[in-house]
Amino acid sequence: MLAVSILPWIECARPSLAADLHPALTSDDTVFGSVVLSEGDEWSFQPGYVQGSVARGSFKDAVHTPSNFGKFHVKTFGNFKDTQQLYAAGYLEGYLTAARINDYHTNTFHYFTKDMNASLEKPMEWLKEQDKWLHEQIEENKGEPYWDYMDALLKQFDGMVDGYQQASRDANSPDLPLLQRQDFIFVINNGELYDIIEFFKPGALYDWEAMSGHELYQNVALQGRCTGLVTVASDLTNLFIGHASWDTFSSMTEIYKNYEFNLHNPQVKAQSLSMSSFPGELFSDGDIYLMSSGLVVVSTTLHIYNNSIYKDINPQAVVSWQRVRAASALAGSGEEYAEIMKKYNTGTYNNQYMVVDFNLYQPGKALAPGTLWVIDQVPGLVAAADMTETLTRGYWPSYNVPYFQEAYHKSGYPGFVARLQERGPDYLKAVNWMSYQLAPRAQIFRRDSSNVTDFESLKSVMRYNSYKDDPASQGDPIASICGRSDLDPKKPKPSGCFDGKVTDYYHAMRMEAEVVNGPTTYGGLPPFKWEGSFNSVVHQGHAEVFDFDYELQKPEMPRPSYMA
Image 1 (cartoon, rainbow, N blue to C red):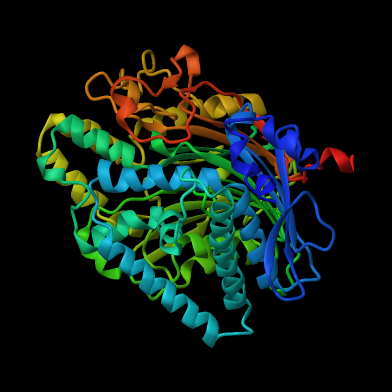
Image 2 (cartoon, rainbow, N blue to C red):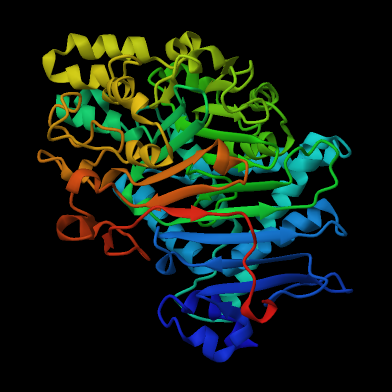
């Protein structure tokens, strides 16, 4: 049994060993497994697809895919309770993706503690308090659909922890250390941590006053974690959605996840969810969700430049990834999605969300009200509105600047911009970056969004970077749709845009998308390599060269060869 148990992660180093030891377990470099609940209420992982299991699924590691995205699928069965289904789904994910969870934890922990020199003791206590409060609310509100869903969601988290730990015990190898629950809380909440760190010590991550013009511009640009686009064909015959993640390149360990549940909660509108994600996380964090309810959601990060509103950050609430999962399951429209996001806002991991309701869209017909809802979340405020009227004029862009004036002012953008303007022309690039109208990505989208006429042109636009020739970029490799700070001649950093995800009406109706991992090579830009000074950045489990292609992602479960 031990030889079988260690297969899901050793295939990275020795690809043929899994098939040699257990031919039924693998097919085309895909590993299959099931989670079984015994009559004695004991959970276990078993290789292959097992009859009567609570969950079954598969994992194909990124080293075997053209996109460098791993591929995870899980299906649960309706003859089990919701909490059992999601626990089993988490257990299977934790077990099959254990090696990648360890890689991602290692890289992310080093990034926070070494590269950012962040103190995590108090922020982790804050998250511990939030976790305790959430469990108390679940216990006090049993039978209420919202809290019952939260109960099942936390069981999925518990299952992931237990599945990973079982994989670690089975491997019995220093290459797969035993991570504790607190380590998983860190991983899944790493997006929340930026705001929590600033809550305890404003200015801990960014000392704006001490920065030169270029240094401040680079930090402002790179702390914005995404680019998003929703656009419609000129004849309204298609609706396109694109997204590109921005962050440290040490984050480039991505998995495209497909969840297919059979939950009994009467408020669940979406039993299935497909998303770009990361190991150890149960939400996208790559910020694109496709739901069987007909909704598609993308988001980009918003940042706080007004320290006074950190007082509104509250651990007795629901962190953003939990609210997003609840909204993605329970909402049947953009308006319902916004209402769920407004409740119990912790004020952490603040984002702009764009919710497209494909149930209301008919190719070639006038866009119906409610087709696009936009949500801005900052501490103490969630602003939202139906923005379909704007979409009728062609497109909706998103580039880390709040749209709604209340959110823009509350989060401190006007005051911060005014202070930068007073510091002189060296800070003009940072000023423009923070403008909803003058930001380089705003200018490029305004000029080029009409170039999206089909799926291939959408893929190209979301990887666009012609900084050497584009007047909007002014020779700056960061200032584009898919910016690359590693090419900055003044102060290169392994950071910026590192993927692309796209879908449209016809793909979304099948819950399909195309994705690619890695910094853009648009227009002949050199592939990113972990070499030179960049090699000192911890990047465990990464490819050494990132030169990959878009790959179609489908929600259908792969079948082992013995079931063909």
